[in-house]
Length: 416
Image 1: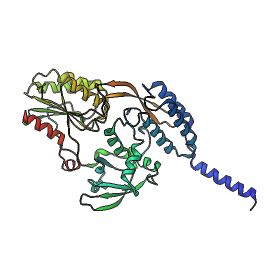
Image 2: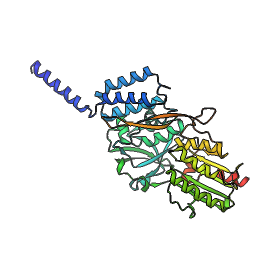
Image 3: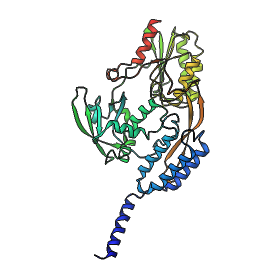
Image 4: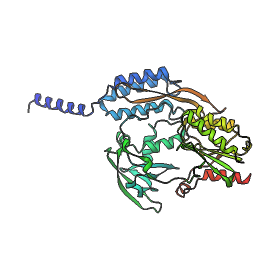
């Protein structure tokens, strides 16, 4: 075989390798737009990473992009964006993958003090609910948590890190890009029952857009039933009267429009005013945020109800999934309604970059978000809103459906 032929074969092989890693998007252009737009619109882009370090890392990503798949480039951009806030503090600057076509394992997990438990699943995998994940494709869960948490969007503190990492580790595209799995279509999960029985189960993925999580079998905490006097008809904002507690419970899990909130608050005001209700419980758990001024509409109505015990009778429930405007409103309810805060610290911080803006990269169409404002709702910085009474979620309580935070409030009311 002549040298020319050998050279031609080597060239052909290198060409095949290059084409295998070739990317569909103009990442050089996208990364330039990424930097220019963040520098123009972010409230304080270089509050953690220096401008020099940011530029060096961006240039390195540009140079290495040709050796990566498109999704690997995206993951590295997620890593850089995560580090703008140091993984803490600036949760609104992120690459959230909202407009990406993703593959997800059809289960949901929660981190209970380091144990990753399956708490919800589509019918096919409903029998796995309650099991602890030990590894995925023989990669220990501890390493997966560490690797995914280094890129997870919307991380303001360790509590949002727990929630966000639990969600993003179920995206198989991410696990493949990180080298944890070889396929986006399936993976082998090594699981442990409470009785120490260990088994390995193959779980297949589906396109995220095809998954209906509302139809999942799930473990959940027992909440009060929605009142028939709540005539507004919102699924994510409703109230329940608790006559034996002389209380009204408000479940506030998603922000409605101003008009809807006004109607809800007016109806609530009318119904409470006809009772002798003394205690008020506002449940902000699992509220990912919205328009904080809509939350203030609720406070303005509640504040006019004189029969409420404004000294000791107002409570707000929070957890690691109380984010953004929900965390801000929690701090405001503490100040304006003299509320006692009960539960886990919030995933959103009371001080720091907030109020999300966004833009789309021109070639890839990737969505990038950023912080537009800085809020200061406390004299001192803290990792999340620190509850007045901390009640952490434990696996035994969750397994039993016991809402320990709500039960704590009931006990306080009973002891008044």
